[in-house]
Image 1: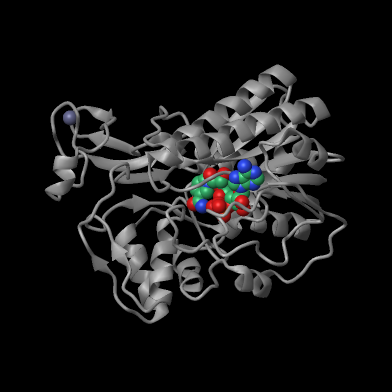
Image 2: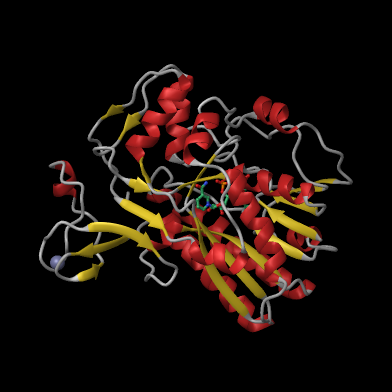
Length: 371
Ligand SMILES: NC(=O)c1ccc[n+]([C@@H]2O[C@H](COP(=O)([O-])OP(=O)(O)OC[C@H]3O[C@@H](n4cnc5c(N)ncnc54)[C@H](O)[C@@H]3O)[C@@H](O)[C@H]2O)c1
Ligand SMILES: [Zn+2]
């Protein structure tokens, strides 16, 4: 199979390309090498059998990259919370306009199979149960509560303490920030494309992905990278709130394998179909726990719990990833303990690390567009 991997120079995309290569598939990488994702400049030794440096918003570039391709694995996106609301047009442009252009060119080229990098951010807060009211949906937390150190969301009906649970794919969407809104819109666009063209689309809603090659701490990076970068500088990881935020940390090797599995499976689906799958380890842990395990494996310093907070952060979100296991036969293989231990000393992303960790590959073409 020849797969177009958009965002193939990014953290997850590069691992997807490596996993596809190991399974005997070819990859065409399309990546604009955004400065927000690559602050240290273009990585050397980009992965892929063909590399197109260009933007998914550019129709001509996308049409060219799609030549001879059987399926698309769409990873390209602006990620993270960003600096402030001024970033909104950039997120919407890269993530939604970019997806629309990609889908329009897939329609034109007759490429019918799509695996999309979705995200658990579409759920907003995770699942909660009230002892009296059953499953409830607390809204965004009030700043007055956060300021007073009241971090746990309460039952919207009776104010009782809630028990966090695993969120399933049919939970209502509740995107809480610009990035989350763009990730949800990507799924809606993919579903509309599938209906209009007879295409088949699978969205993998990744939970918190971590592992080697993760970007360093920029406003666009994830929490594991903040902690890992602090430790690399000899500083204590700074844990927000009280460290009790529950997440599902899933290793990038498992996420890459989920993409390879989904690319095989999507071809067997009904035409005009769309399905979303939670992609998590199934083993919730707290942010405080992660900081402690990382700091321990790194040899210190110990984390500091600061009580700081960010508006728009959710308290708990953990996935029920059973459907992906049962329907697609995927299994996460890297345990939290092993994965975090490796990650504590694994190289983060910059040009030198990338060359060391991935080696150089032969390419049949490198195209430079004016991106
Ligand atoms: N890292 C996570 O924990 C996580 C969680 C949920 C979902 N995701 C999704 O996974 C995908 C990959 O994320 P990542 O963590 O590897 O991020 P990343 O920033 O490392 O990689 C994204 C890549 O996409 C490229 N890109 C962005 N906009 C582009 C555009 N307009 N045209 C061409 N290339 C463009 C960037 O240059 C970058 O190389 C994204 O879609 C993201 O939303 C990631
Ligand atoms: Zn209640």
